[in-house]
Length: 406
Image (cartoon, rainbow, N blue to C red; front, side, top):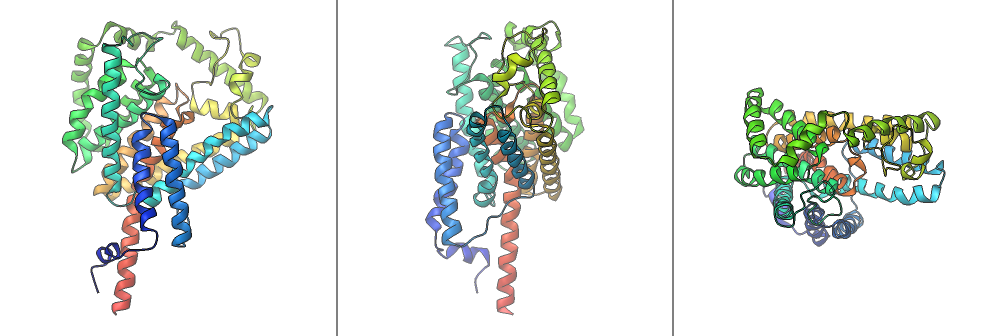
């Protein structure tokens, strides 16, 4: 017989056209969502159709990584919260975002083997274009004020900066851990760093620092020695508005800081009134004036700018506990895969840095509810598991072949 997986790959199988189209569509989703959520969601639909076709044509079973189960339970808790919402119709409409969780089994199915590294190259390359556009907006179009910041082709600077934050984690992980693609990542990194800085988005800055800290810790603690040099250069070259924005991080009299503290109090009141199911998905903004205290700066806010607080207030304490279960399960899974080494180490390091960035930035922004950021996050954290799945399938095939030959 042949050489195991090589022979299996060479033989044309039913549904190969769906396999190829689904993979390309997934790659396109990861790249396109940095420019257009509508285009990314259309491509996601194509990928899901291809996956469904493979399940039927090849009679495959749905396979998922371990951390998907708490994510599914979180979706269930969200639906329960919508049932008890003051406006169930509005809350159930908001639940459509739960469909994005299908990116986990979708990525697990298609992004096997070396596809994970290639997908990350696509993401970094698209981000380089997006970063260049943001820099152009700042320098030429004068998107250089708090009320008009670089946002690429996206609808909001928070989404733009959140995506750049994640891609910086990927690029730095590739520089430190990958055996290929380091040069391109190093060339792109300055543009990514400048673009995220010019967004004046403090939560993304904090997230980038957290991602770098995780990667330095995983690689070599001595790398922290470069931080004072980087900080000194950044301060020397940064525009005055950027340095002023950095200083506002430590200014408790800053209006946005005071408003975020007020949001903590609003969320606390919502949780006290509705501890089990929350006020309902997409109901925080509508009910904000009811729970608003005298310390609040703005009359209303779309969300509470804090992921755990938003989840607890919107969906209840049980949903928050399940979300924490998801995070713990995800980090545990990624850590095991990082310890394996090899190609998987780069993918796992990038995913761990992405988790750190999202969680840290999520203390100041509800990024888990941002569809573009959530989509990229779910794809990236699933890649290490997908790579391992490919190895498991290869070993299983080789084992069956040896049995037949024997």
